[in-house]
Image (cartoon, rainbow, N blue to C red; front, side, top):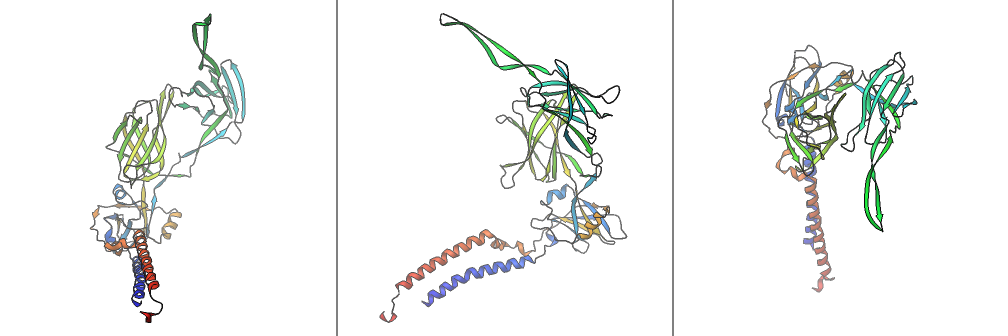
Length: 475
């Protein structure tokens, strides 16, 4: 009996001792400081001599993008003595007086006057609070139409032409192309007159008139005649829009880069053009295509390859790329914007449907520029270190840097020197070969096995206890 009790106690003690060792190991790792020797790249920070503490800004480049992880946890700055230096990483922004946003509103003071059976004039009086419109938009539920539009400023004598021979159209029967906006010149008054021509259009009906001839209960012939409908142009409302300048706003500074080595394939079954390209993991916020094609509109999707599954593609953004050049109509949108993403493998999917594929001439990406800002002191030299697979974000005191930037202190521009490839020496205890013992999956599996062994031992012990005689002297 004593042997069984000792065995049970040992089974209970083994998991406790093992988990205690793991906990102690975790506590020991919590105090481990990452060694700078584990960073793969080092570059000197070059700047002009300074006589007092001041801010320095260090620009990032493609080599740093290629070697660092998302969120910049593996970037450090140290001085000549190897001491860590606090710093901030921020996107570079620039003032843009031309930055605008579009304000839209519905015209309220509207009157309509028929000119003839096929034209109409719409008068609009702007409210005192309305800005000068840069364009107007027709809201209509109709499809398959084409109308000529003229706009005049009637508050001056003689009336000034703000838009002449503009076209609004919808070609849904042929292609998903629709335009109901009209660009305007700036007028001098608050009164507009809009003339819409070809107000009523003939349209072939989907119905057919059939006439059948019978003689003695037998059909002797029939005729079919297509029907045409006179359809008026229905306008639900007219919207106005204006571009309002934000002179106090800043925008991210972007670096536009050409992508070489595009891999373009055609998927005839899916009616798609697939454009594969690789990057060095720059943060990308825009993709643009170059083509000589005109008068097209294509839906496109930007995708990145999933890190865990090379055969799986994840959607980043979906939009429409288009270019129109017909008469006085000249419009194009060849770019697709999205929140910045870092990835190596990219794909652009162009949905052609039944239209011929576009002939691409190139592709460009827009890369937001990042920089590190540090507070430098005289007679100190600094180095930028980066590239570590296990480093975590440093917890640094950056309040002085933040307050200086809020006080509009302009950092001094610095540069990075030649790259030195460092020999990685994994001195941290967190990288020892048995580090996997602290993984949750391993611990969970081990505890499960020990519980099963313990249950088996308890069951065996209970069986033996039940088989023992009540009075040992009877043996």
